Image (cartoon, rainbow, N blue to C red; front, side, top):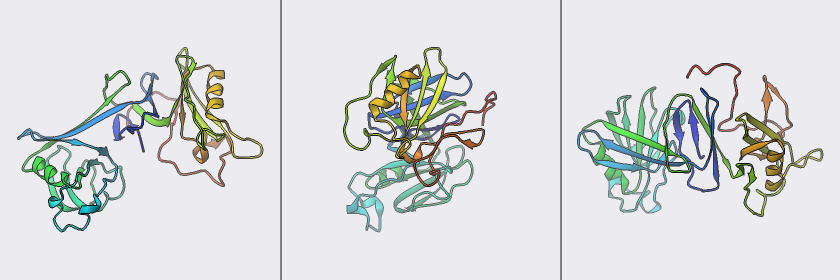
Length: 282
């Protein structure tokens, strides 16, 4: 959910919610980019030039309720989704009403199906469409090879080239920006005291990760304002709040060094892992 960037491969696009705060590290240089990233995607037929925008990456498409029972999905007149899938998504792509086009490593069409759900081999990708976009996808994919394009942009609108060595995860809300606390005012459980995960950089560019335990009698956690105060106290000129709560965990050399709030470590979708050796790709 939200940005997922692994070794230069974008497997999950940034969320549209402006509260998302992305944390991107260049493993080759150690430089960090923070902020809410933008994304646009498209699929284009190389021969005909026919083009269609993508809504998501590795994200189950929504099937319009009015079209779920149609025998022919191309008869649907309600807008749906167009999504690109990679083998990393799962053992199989999402099944259900709609159409699916499977591509080889060159982007050429291997097969099309009037139902969604298939197993992808290494190097293959697929495109799924629901609603009235089913007919549009079949037209674009007809008789040729396709080019899918994903573009990430920073907060200035400048493109962030997807190259080997880039890794990124998403958080929610910036904590500090240029040394200033920038957490918005808010109420409710998210802004109350919880376990927290902080990622940020000092003035001289050092990367700092910190976890704050909570939801225990021995450690109550921090509010969002207090989390920002911790970040500033650690000398973080720029910092973001990553996933917290029961997902807050830190291990060093294989040993858990904090106390997660649940009964056990929680399985999470991604993590930041620092290895004390030069990045060699992969």
